[in-house]
Image (tube, rainbow over all chains, first blue to last red; front, top):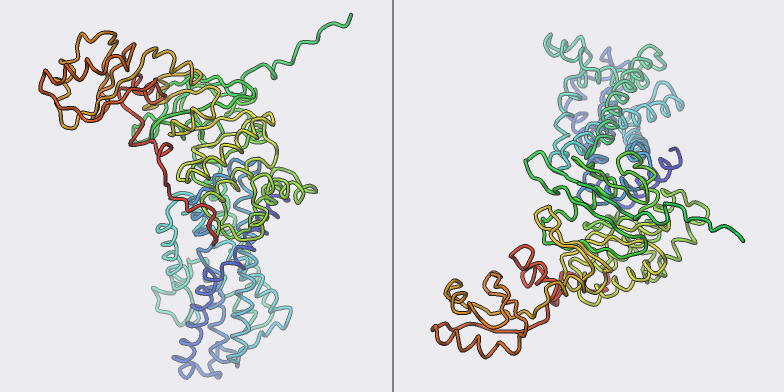
Length: 252
Length: 341
């Protein structure tokens, strides 16, 4: 199966490179948010603000922009397009593991996520942020962001397989809003209103943001990183298993 | 004297065999209803029927994409439900909707297809060979989205052939193609068949079924209504067919006027026309015109022909496939030929 994943992953990466129209908008949004948020509140939260640890507000916002950059429906949309144009049937009728079709897409999600995260990180650095955990920390930041992108891709892939409908798959971005905004994305947990704090604390994505942010603001906080990785892997595992079941039972 | 070794059963067993094969969908549609099929090794078997007759559903069951609701299907000696992966290794499939990835080039698509079928070291060589067979070498390194309909169809055919399948399923392989592209596909299908592959071809084009198929089955509303070699099916009708365009004339009055005509076997309503199955078509024309004139009926065009597959379909179902559905006998189609893109 590894060979099949390699072949299909390579194809999906080639598709990403040749179809930049699908990727560029997903990078525009996080960069726009980063610029606007910094512009609006950097004076409200100067570098002397305790939770910024001496950095500008851009450092606090950067993880949210990283999440914006990697949490896309690109794979789901590519998959539903293939269902629509018949290429998906061509893959199903080949003597391959159906799972390799999903894993091939996720390989491309990782590559696309890593590229997007690197670009947003560079933008953040250009805006004045630095990664407290150093170069290795920056690499870990990119890898963790890309892994979250892989985990998140499961939503759109699942909707694509279940509905076989482009419009429905496109609406998977709606999941993005509660997941990314009911978090300590603008201020830490303890500065949120009680209701928002309660919601943020039960939202697993909060801990992904906290883990990424720790690398930028605090340095190496192993506990936060472990929770961040654990949440990402758990979310990815659950969604991937659901996607694998959906493709196994496709037309069955 | 050396004892004769019996041929292995697999070589004599049908390439495709279906027994009481059925498929229903959740919305209460019985798309395929207890069909029996037996396709011999090495033949081109046609599956002829109008849109929505159950052709594609049958193909999808036979090539493991859709499980049957009931019944069995054996392909190359293997049960499609029990041995799906092994069946997929032995079949090639080109479905009605051309399944190609538009972002790749033709060569990349074929090389990927080779890899998925376990052909690794020879992938480049095999792809080049297939590009030559389907005459796409010049376009091999262009992205597929720029191919014309005919080119896409030929590339899809090549993709179905990378692993030299024993059984090739072609679901309406020429739908939407212009006449020259259609004939090119026919030549390729014949060449593939000459190479030893059994071909199962669905079509709604009478001319295609007549031209290509050794034997065929006619399907309508999920049921097989006739089967046999095209010539046998036509010969079974055993009469000439006189078609009378009604042009607004009352079908019942026209029927009544023609009752008792010499050599008349039956009259079938053909949607806007009547088909008279008579022993001597040409010899009956004068009498037909005389009778209609006497009854005050002014018909449209009257023509005499030997029975066609359309007449076979008409006799079996009471409806015609042509001219409304038989684009195969018309010019045009949505394919602009070998357009550049």
